[in-house]
Length: 472
View 1 (spheres, rainbow, N blue to C red):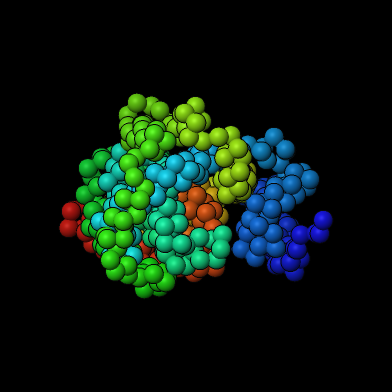
View 2: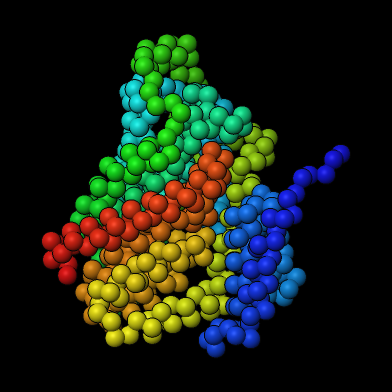
């Protein structure tokens, strides 16, 4: 065999920054423990390694976790706890569901129907796919389930139909654009409904702990204007900034009709796949009402596909994208949670509150929103971030004189849109980015631009809309 090629020079920046932070421990803030400071050094070095990529992300994350254990920062039991995280396995199951769509041909059939109805322009396809996310969002409290389990299989089939795949370097034809558009569509719909993702529900519970009540309809009415603006604007903006090679498909309807005719009637495997998919979709939509975890639903769906013969164990073991994502996402979740458990994140939130003392509440809100949004670069989980910071930041806002409901809802919105930062920001990000259609440099560059758009629309226009509603 020959050795795998590794660009060792790309280790230099992560190691240098990590070592600098590590050895600056004599100058660390008094409120931060030594172990928390060392965890910060390893976390920052790992994130930088995920950016420079001397190895694939899973390899970088594995090395970071190993160093944390060898250096005595955490025990091996604590280091592996991320592999028991439900969101991690939700992502894996989403990949396996996607494989069922491809194996049976059902995904191709759905793709052809979409092409038939909306396929004259690629932009129209993006709006149609985001429309699926929008319709299911109010009753689907897992944005990973929507993006990874519902929409992603359709995108992958569409991409395959148009000959666009990362396996042969043709992802920019249409796949890259559709993946990135759906990711941002999912971010927007996650902010529009209280029940559209788990971190929203965490925020509502934490706000109640501070005696601030947020109703479902109150959240929705406050979100409707910035949400609709973003739904209309963002897919078009991505189309201009990140254009697909295939922009129009003349005669799409005739072509799709011909392909559907060649496929013939719906086969038994397709019917079984469709049945399992509908069961999963319905259970995902009602899971919050019947107390059934979304990840459990995903496992049930994959189990049914195995029992029916739609999927084989070999199919699951061969789904390398799923296993790669499970490894690196689980490790980053562990590291981010450790920063909170060891006290670094609570200290940072408290320090921010003290530094803003005496400012007008409007300025305080601007600072808190910006800080809350960009601090998500340190997190691999929206739920962990909201849990760590939401209460502290809301308390700072209220103590500065900000109207309680306005502050609670605005910070709730930020808890959705900060998912637009990185490929490890949340479940949908890791599921969609992990498919390999988008370059990491493109993901970070475009997300930075669109992050500014979200801050203006949700923070600026959203604030003005809430003024009209009398929330401040």
